[in-house]
Image (tube, rainbow, N blue to C red; front, side, top):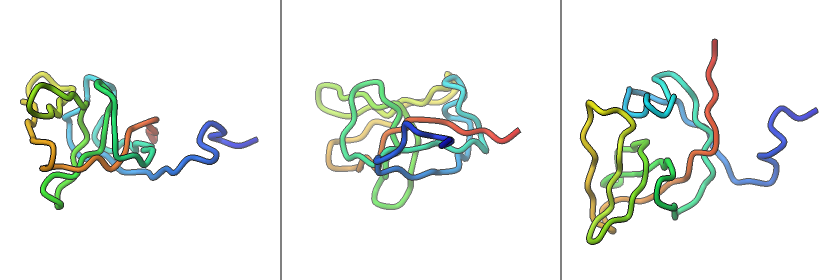
Length: 100
């Protein structure tokens, strides 16, 4: 029996989460996120976004009138506002793994 049969055939990668920006979505520091490699996202999806070709962030994606809002799931943190060409979606989170 495969541990993760729903992932068969998908282009995925796994990242270890650092920080508390997504705790209200139950994604905690030290968790691992399973990411489907995609360069587009729908509003409300949690994405791995590359900012300025150097730093990655995990946030909810929202396309708004003249910008993109990368929204943390932590009410103590502010959203990141970027223009279309100032970031790149690396993938969309499709699962979370936590070691107990």
